[in-house]
Length: 122
Image (cartoon, rainbow, N blue to C red; front, side):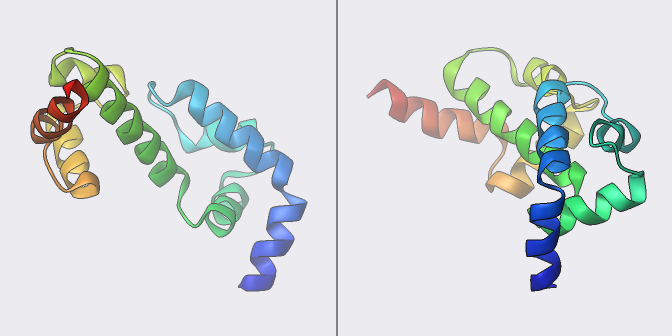
């Protein structure tokens, strides 16, 4: 596996970079694996395997992390309602967003905003 990591990283650096760029540009939309793999010029199966080997996460884990990171920024920097943020960053359901946010961050979006926005004002 370690050899695979280094081999894949060198061999597919450009394709993974293209896929990451595509995700960063389009994470707020409903991205399909087919679109991401196409941006890397690889088959879906091959792309998924390589992406996970190189990044240590699936393409959709990466998309979710990007969305959660953006949500955290918006929660701290704006007063946009949480429901609006969830849809603006690509979630189709407030419940899905809240559950994933809590699972990844350890608290709900509203708790996060209250706790850390207060600190930013100090």
